[in-house]
Length: 87
Image 1 (cartoon, rainbow, N blue to C red):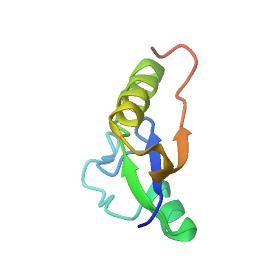
Image 2: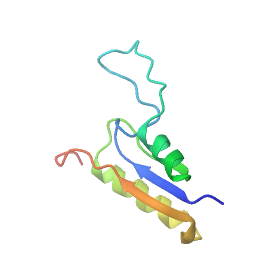
Image 3: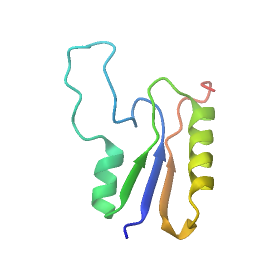
Image 4: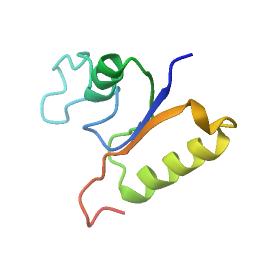
């Protein structure tokens, strides 16, 4: 079984990124969490969401980690922090 790469962040992290400046832009390219997971041979759990701040990032990571019964499955956790003033 592959180890888990768990990431959370804002629009730079989410798989569902859409450009607000150029809504017609096709943003379906692989985002950094997926690329990193492939390079590390891990399974990616991407909790990132556009427009969310540090409180969301912390909370989603904490919730996900607590729900995983076997902590040995976790290989790496990354909090891709947003700007300091964004809760």
